[in-house]
Length: 377
Image (cartoon, helix red, strand yellow):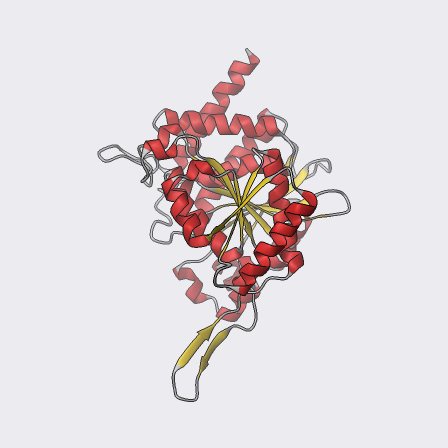
């Protein structure tokens, strides 16, 4: 595949913890689409984390940066875990996933939340609460408290230690992610909820003012509402079906999307996509990854749920490759596998044997093959 110049280049980076395990299943899915659907992709595997650090002294070695820079899309697994202790903090900070997002200008993170009816019993929320849940959280990804300066830990004159971080947003940083969210809402059901903490934080006051002004100038056709983040968290577990698109800052988006996983049944179900600015060719650099972390307690056991990673490919098909039919086919295959009882350990009901990471991949591939054969008949 890699020799075809007309194919979209995709860097596949498993990362750490369970990242390589779930990403292996996504690679199988991508290869199936290339072989059976003619999906125009060229895959390039690359390393990240402790393994390349021990060999090269870099968490992201030069050949991985080359793969990232030449790719239109990156499929990433996970980062973090106990193995990070073998990598000096300076080296990890220099080449962290946060640094990748910043260097690539990935400012808008898209996290869809869908409550599959077959998983209602596996979810911690009641079925009546889950009916009709289909929302997207847009998280600002390259600013806010995760990047603000000054930051650090210091010893005060009286001997006490103090840690400090800075929550900061500029007007253009708010406007660009809000515009992204408004445009997404316009393509969906036309409703956007902006989440902040404007009753306490000046950065949130600016956030609310900028979102409101942008709405009045460019998106009066989209219904705009505002919620404080504490109320938004409660509403996501009380009545998540009320939301269409949410937009919020970096730290709030991180927390709220994990909270919203209660509607999907498990954090392992959630995909995400991160986007940079539109280039001169009208394209955006994008990074696709599951929302979950490296889960070191189950790494290497073959029990991780790969569906967050696999369902990230549906976003890739739609938003980078512009192949909505491929996305619909993959979504139907995942839904059918779940409807047929496929459950990894995070979703399994008491007394029923969970499937392994690889078996879940097998079941999705089986459903893809069945649908392809039916379409060809």
